[in-house]
Image 1 (cartoon, rainbow, N blue to C red):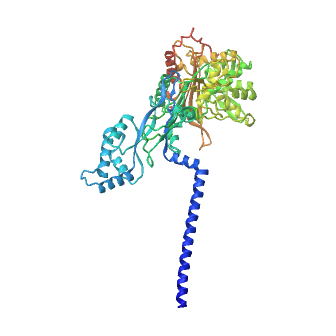
Image 2 (cartoon, rainbow, N blue to C red):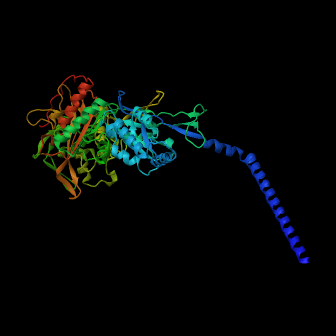
Image 3 (cartoon, rainbow, N blue to C red):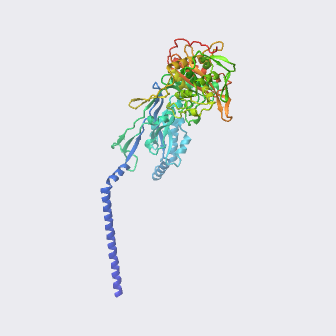
Length: 618
């Protein structure tokens, strides 16, 4: 009997213990909940409210319109148009249609295969050759969560397709248009829609090469954002709900110095003479003689940024500013202006010029065989005598010659405002050897771009003042505010008198006269106008042989139009033309065609008088 009582008492004790434990746990839970409620309402209320607000608010990016690139007359060379991208969610749509078919008893429920076939057919019909129906089907029926079906879709066509198929997703985009096709393509470059940034609002048109890349910050603008309220757990915008808008700031327009009509003509002529001379490449530049502004900058080979299927990397380079070459005899202008500036000679002075000359350890000859002849100073340059040039350069001296090269900007970038510009190559004065001065005055042993070469002639066209070239004229803000580009600092190279005398001497390069008094480029002459100019033929250095080639040359020409009242400077270079062709020996005919067009395009008045025929040989 005693044992039974103990058992009952123990059972009762266990029950009371369980009740106490349960009550304790319940009280502890209530206390914890109360403390959490105090924490949430008293300390985290603002943060949680913001998080909840964020969950039901959606940021819709507002793209900024990329600015246009225009020529000096306002002609659009590059601009942006609104387009759409159409996308699809294959995995989610397949699942949704399969679930709908399983729940619905209707027999006419559209299957996934039927929907995708219909979308592909309609897109092929509306977009035509822009898409392939088979490729669309492959994308639509993939296992991807998200796939783009077509980009650069005209807005009206996108609306038509979305009206037919609500399961299509639409994104706002922009496309860059280049109405001139390849016109100034190497200058303008190329821009397309970029999506590398994880933030969608930063997806936009961005430049890849050329001015589109270099001036991307000016052109791009700043995207805006629209904050809208959405239904809980969805991306469905609640119509009529208040929203905030931070408007986009559109990009600025960039106005260039080039003339689209002249650029087109020069490009066509560069391609024509490239074929006629069978050169590897041809580059040409047209400068304003007074301001250094670039009116045209072209290569014979270029690309069309509108063309589908990607761009050939070999055609993207702007050789006129990125590819230096040895200039040859066009570099003799340095000796010509130095000899006049330092009072070493006069245009009519006569020099006894042998057929060759020794400079340090090398012998330099003229391009044509001759014994000792008498050449005027004008004749030395008009007939392009290497020997006569070196004789005069020796009197100038290496230090003064080096100073002239520096003032002319040789060995330094011009700062034209184009990417990839080369400074060329010029040994520092303290590294010149004895034979260096047997090379430099005749245009060997240094290199420059065609833009730098034209800049030397711009200096004498502008009465001795070199104005570094530029290609961007102004930036025009979305509100129409115009901000002129800073003008480059001019450099006085020689006196006005020296520049005019040098310019007058170089008129004889284009003269045609009997008794050996013709210059090297009568083909450059333009009827009714005085023309100053200089031809150049430079041997190319053969790296494999370790010496200058006897068969590969750079052919150059630089000219001033008109010589008596300079308006333009034109420079051109041929890379390895064929000497078996009539046009492989001289760029003078190319200059003639460009100069003739310039006289008509800009209604340049005829010269007051013909250039006098002067003696070159005495």
